[in-house]
Length: 271
Image (cartoon, rainbow, N blue to C red; front, side, top):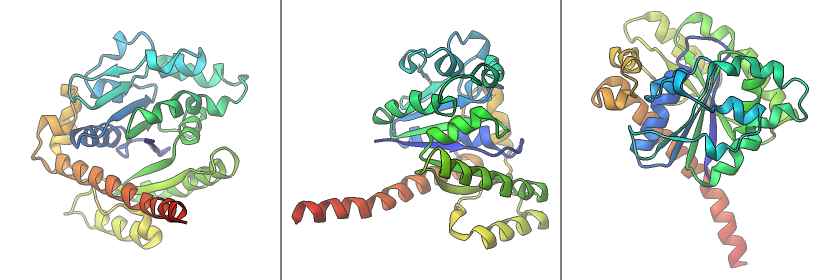
């Protein structure tokens, strides 16, 4: 069964969409069946993998609000053979208002995505920069959450609020939600502040912090304008290599975390 990972932080400009696109593309490049879910009304993840949001007929919005079959809205990208997309649309802005009176409104995305977990190895959800109903839906649907943190002072301020939200969702809506990791982004080795933020985050969150740190990189900034992930724009750039390393780290972590269960199952069978 595939793992559903939300990429969330209510602060804008921390690299959520960049990380979602390039992590999904890197996993696909490693030949893992990967689905990228664009849950942000800005639809940047949709355009970032080569689709024009203006041409999208059905999106995650219709799936959550109108109950359209999720299988009917999955798009196969032409970029990488193992990468599919559930697109977004500006209509998603109104979804929170339209869903307010729906029963189990926090679980609409979960109802749509969980049946897909058998089709994919990884499902990556790009969340909007808010803690509204759509993000709550994403966290309720996910098995784990990646929290991108920009290597700047203000990025640390909102981290506590997000972690409290995750705790609330764990206690009320999704007991199995765990923190996949805190991802440090936009790191500039030349800046003392960047190094201080890295030290601070690692001091407070220790093993929750990914070993991989995403640097500031021109190629990462350029690739969205071409509608392609950085791995297809410049595979040898620091940004591309960093996201491939992140993908490998996540794969390794999930294989390792699965081992104790496999060992227990083997012991039970032997007994």
